[in-house]
Image (cartoon, rainbow, N blue to C red; front, side, top):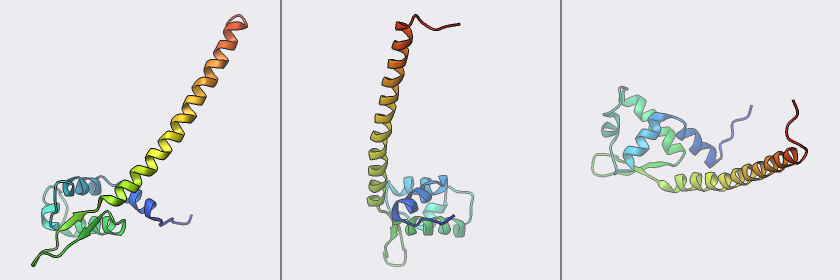
Length: 119
């Protein structure tokens, strides 16, 4: 099976991990260093750095340089693209669901006109 590496796939892949979602949640409140991001987790700084690399590859975060530190910064643009995809597909799925509901209601009405259900 081929691995698709388009931007949206990278975003959803990055968001699939609860640790990375927690890191993004933290960065939504402001920039943070790797040490600050690693604090709440029971994992090594190296493990957190690996998660950050995945988030960087998906372009959900970037690192800036401030004096001696390199704080991580949330880049919400890719999240907006994912939200847009979800919103478009939610409308499609909702429309299909509505059409299925209407079809089932038509079938049930037809059964009632035919004298109800047979046993």
